Image 1: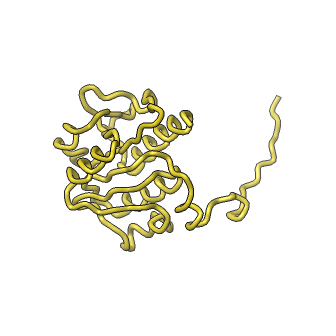
Image 2: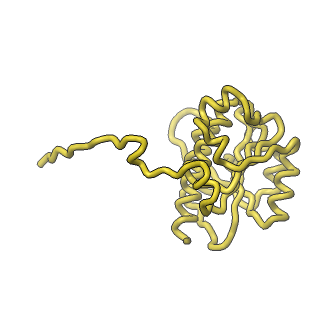
Length: 184
């Protein structure tokens, strides 16, 4: 028997979202996101927004990756450049070295030998993770891949070899955060 449910979209003030100040003070998930030479400002903005949505610790913008303030980043970030902590690195390897020294496990999102499906990822309680998202054409840099502790991939069933970096980042960030939340 079909039951009809009366669905009503929530208004912005009914969603219970944090203010920027509350977000900055709130506990974050132990996940940093690294953009390794991501060319599109729209992709950068979308990842800012995703990092805000899933309370990632911070976003590291590396190499040719654009930085705020930029009109196209702001367009897709919708204000998340104000809430998400971020830092620019001229060289991605400098960011990776700093993360490793700070105790982060480096997680590359890439189709590679030894990669595991993103939904099979298991977070270890007390560990901090840094997810590296690569360039739209070249993927994650080979030098960065050599430093990765874990390599995740998103199973795909169509004809294309990859997803847009902001889409794949959103999927991977959510899968990792689900596991981190499950451990807390």
